[in-house]
Amino acid sequence: MNSHDKPILLKGIQIYSEKVKLENGYIKMKDQKIVEFGPLEELDQEDSFEIVEIPSNYKAIPGFIDVHIHGVGGADVMDATKEALDTMTNTLPGEGTTSFLATTMTQSSTEIEKALTNAGDYIKEQQARGKAEILGIHLEGPFVNAKRAGAQPLDHIIDPNLEIFKRWHSLSKENIKLVTVAPEQPGGLELVRYLKENEIIASIGHSDATYEEVSGAIEAGVNHVTHLFNQMRGLHHREPGVVGAAFLHDELKTEIIADGVHVRPEMVKLAYQQKGNEGVILITDSMRAKCLKNGQYDLGGQDVTVEDGKAVLSDGTLAGSILKLGNAVKNILAYTGCSLEDAIEMASVNPAKQLKIFDKKGSIAKGKDADIVILDENLDVFMTICRGTLAYTKEEN
Image (cartoon, rainbow, N blue to C red):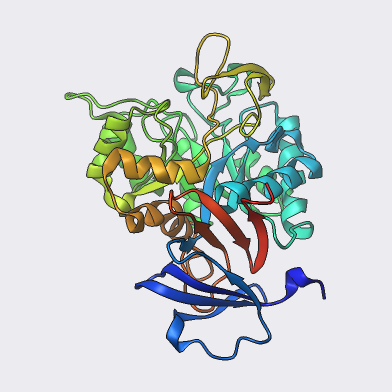
């Protein structure tokens, strides 16, 4: 047994647990789970644990769950290699992400099938301790509306197709957990109904749907919105569009890219006021250039230029982000004035509930996976633990 597998004891730290905030607490982790936590004065029996002492003004919070991420550190889900997913699972703990949905994008069906097969195999056979865990796949495109393509390549956009989806789901070893779809397109509602029956999240995105069409899609089973505001019919006083429907329907959980580039801070605040901390899910939608320097990169076979915190196609269209989820948490605090507890709901609790895995992830509670992030006094990620194994510490990096 290497030291990485020794049970870990975190001591003397602020703990943001599911029910209560402890000022001076401890957390015991063993066999990938949180086995016990509480106030420090109640701690007994620590000899079998590897003790990690943390400054008392640092905070232990649940690991972040990113349900929409394409790439990081030079790797992309569409590379369809084990190495690419290794890079992602290795790199993401550095920003506090302990689990995520590997997100595909619109490409030829051959490319999509390679990526789905690769991710499905990885999820089944290649997940490693001490790295971020791939919880499943987010299929973004090709079942979207060309009018709202954004950086999804137009040549490969197709109408929602149930037969194709069933084939792809089976290639992924049934690991597709979330599908972005434009429900107003031919075949859209049929696909949404199938997704709902099979407990796969149906998300409206890259969509030009009217308010009425969104309402019909919610009845059919849509309960999620892909990157709110971006590439969807916006809010108009005579046509509330996708954004208006998202604001008015509590059934819809809304992803938001809180980088200040994709959505102006004031609009993030407006969305937060409308949806509350139960209705927002922080995502990155990041591409391979995250963690790399300015330059030219590839996204779905297109050239992307990264400069000054922005990733754009040659015509200036935003092409995914280079946002880190830990920074999205800091940004949402700054943009909305919400509390850290509220931000934890948006980065950890809501994605876990939406994926129906809140019994295992999304909060610090006894018996749950030991996915824990330690924030320093500036709320920067200082240390990340993935399923009970140390995955990142700021010093070493």
